[in-house]
Length: 372
Image 1: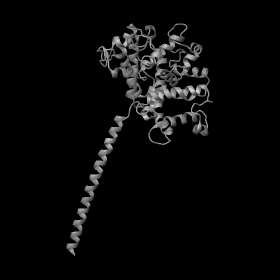
Image 2: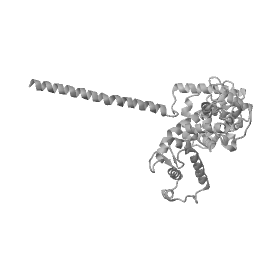
Image 3: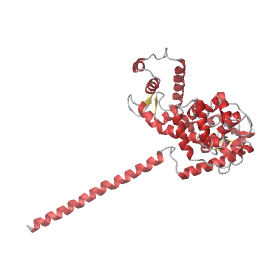
Image 4: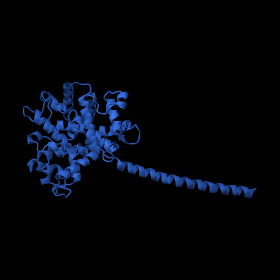
């Protein structure tokens, strides 16, 4: 009797020891695996859309320094007085969201008046280049963040016939027709040439097809998720920006050393540098002093006389504040009728079309026009 109880106790202890061993042999690898997945995810996420307070402080510091750098390049010094402590007011984020919601329900004049009041942070009824650049930069950042966030949802919604992790041209074309009010009967059995379709829609389809061909790298009839972002929002796609850098090297790296020199950069087109590389926009200004200053102050950050891919990528990235500053400078130059270096509301309203099509108001359209 005693021996049988002792034997059962020994067996139970052995079973418990075995269970503990099995539990640890399963749990430990599982924890390691989950940790590796977490590390891989954090390393693989391209372009974080949320910024920390320290990131925001750095962003404001970058904008401050860029105002100083641009003083040596293009902007009249009288317009740069008081640029110290410019920074970026985070209250702009909320204003941007409210304006985005209002864009579809306001008439153009009211929309410009509303944006003017929000951008006029010192409430003096004038927009100087700092205020305008800060507003435009906030609009650009908001647009790119939203485009990246919404890309996955749109991709998933269109990828349904079949749902295979790729969007085919047929799936996108059906989505396009559906969003423009065509019936399912027409979508499933339409004339390939769309004989009865309005010309403007035909032209939109042709433009989409051309952009599709540029974005499709693996299969001309299908787009993966990153290719789809390059198709819908090339300005938000890291992949599309990298391709633009390669295009710059291909066109202007004359000695083939994989770096752009100041001389090579000075031959870049005078319009749309960094965003629009279309042949019809290229007007060489060979050796222009302004272009050379731009290279030295805004691109060649390590001051070695050459620009590598990383420096050019930072230069053309739409989130680089220099784009907002130069856009603000361009708008003020074209609308500042009294030449005080600032714009008031009447000056803006007198150039309504200019401002409505700019990144100050319609950031998405302005970007997409540049990439067409």
